[in-house]
Image 1 (spheres, rainbow, N blue to C red):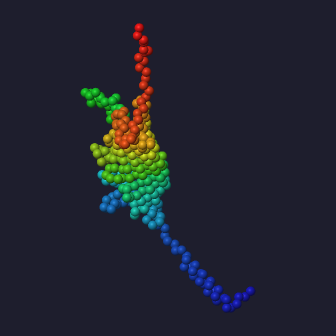
Image 2 (cartoon, helix red, strand yellow):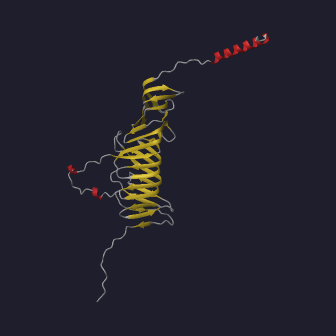
Image 3 (cartoon, rainbow, N blue to C red):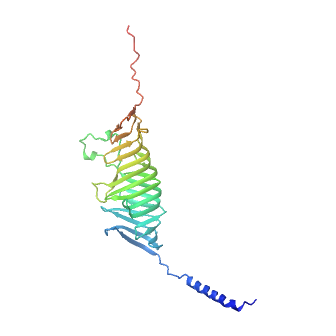
Length: 330
């Protein structure tokens, strides 16, 4: 069939327009930015001081300022010459903002502590502090420190004096205390101090103690008597929600616990309806709204119960003294 002459021109014009529009929409080929191998990238804080260094086997540009990084090793630097190292198999880094994230296992090592977990994030600076790291899956942190026989009678450890230096016992070896939770946050808060926040199925275990709760905060500080590269230690532990504190023959139950490791004190807090309790296999049960445990003493001191507060002490069964049967007078 032959098309009318009055329709041929409009069709040809339309076809030309389509061809021209197709040429206009054709994507322009841009050269791909090549991967960069064996990279060292420094990062600086607001004052111009070196804050972090990123070493990587390979860096691949992604979107905007985002880079995909293979085998990154992140060195973070805090005040007081405090360094920590974080490594993983892969991650995404915004080198301009100083942030990163990834799903693979990230391991962090500092002087006296180590942390690891999956589904992680890192911020060079946040409202809470510097070098904030969050683990949203399988978070774990361990501390190398000297607990000793914490909150247990130390009578057997006291020397009688007068011994020769050669007779002195060797310095107590470092012990590992491990804390685990569903969520873990690591934060450098000031010079020589880190704060760890744990949430969800929290547990902390050492050689001489065990603590279970819903939420926990651990403050880790550098020993003031140590060198800048010396080991740190736990200074404060705060635990909340269905707290169970176990050590040797004693178990404590409370709503909130605060352990001041430097002072050697543990404060247990409960409520009027659900008081704190200390259960000792030898001495019995003590309960009250506030109970204080002191290092090196078997004593559990109930304090500040408030108006109408009741203090309760349950002693073990008193044994029979067997005075014998009473005889009638002749």
